[in-house]
Amino acid sequence: MKKITIYPSYFKQFGDAEGSTFYLVTNSSLLDVFLIEDDKKYKNFKVIVYDSDVSFIELLSKEIQEPAHILVIAPECLFESVHPNDLGPRRKLLIFACNSAPTSLEAIEHFLRCGEKTDPEEQEKVADRFFTQCESTHLLKLIDEEYQTVAEFLHLNEFYGWHEQLGVLEWGGQQIFPSGEIACFLVPLKGINKLPDIQFYLNGEIALRGYPVVHSGPPSFLREDQERIYQKLATFKDYPVIIKIEDGIVVDIKATHQSAKSALKMLEAMFMVDSRFRQIFEIGFAINRHVEIFPRNSAMNEVYGGEEGCVHFGFGMLPYTQYHLDLICPNIKVLNKDNEVIFGSNKKRDESKETKKIIRHRVSHCPCLG
Image (cartoon, rainbow, N blue to C red; front, side, top):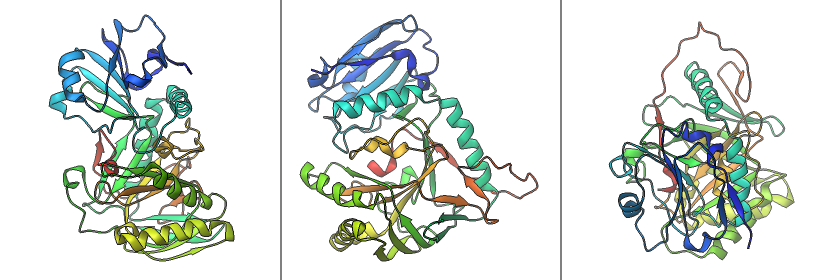
């Protein structure tokens, strides 16, 4: 059986150990897979079994003592965020996003190594710069230069929820691993218990080209169906499917090449079965430059930022729709009202420009996954 080594001191998101015990929480089927490399940083190291018949809250109360740094790698369990009162004031939690899509040992090791390279302090600086630039313009232009598509996004609407999965964890904090995403949602987390009545002020054309992620949530589903959808959507890698958007709703769609027609037909089929898939629920801005795309359907691809940042678009909202699609589009650039590139560029900001503040939230889980 394949062995995967975990190096606790490499997880910079945890910050200083401060006398903590490092806990690895994983499925019983993976107990023989992981090896924890001992170091002097932590007081102790423990492995806790977590299977679907066990409550994680129960594990916290009975088996994970404070202070604790906790890493959860449990592909066989649908993991939901933990209420701060349950997590406690002296625990920090990192969660592998490895259940909403099938996750192999190869994928786990791949993203472990990517996550070890991630610099959370660097991500905080990138996020601060991004929000400063966004606050100085009343709209964002999402463009594809090759196909000359432009969509305008009025991003300062107070009803949008801006959420961050990045930076160094504070005590009582939790974060998806690997980190590195800024996402704008139609609803704040507190409104996630119902589908939003509002729509994105997003209009124009978007060239969808890159890598899909097909998430599935609590409802019953077949992995074979999930994989089939992924394989069809993955045909937009080299040539885009262009969508026309009116107020965040897809009103027209076309393929630019024969090779992308499978992606086109799959999207049309999903639109037909559930019209809610026509609505964009998320616009994500990924900033992890250490993540390399894993060539399978993987939720952890979502934080792929390349060297200059990467935009992705979220269709569907779990648990209301059967799937949530993240369409990762490295071809998209983000411009301000003056046509200056503000995402993926080191251009200096004009300090004389007026700004409107965006309310930012550090969140414990991805809202699109319920």
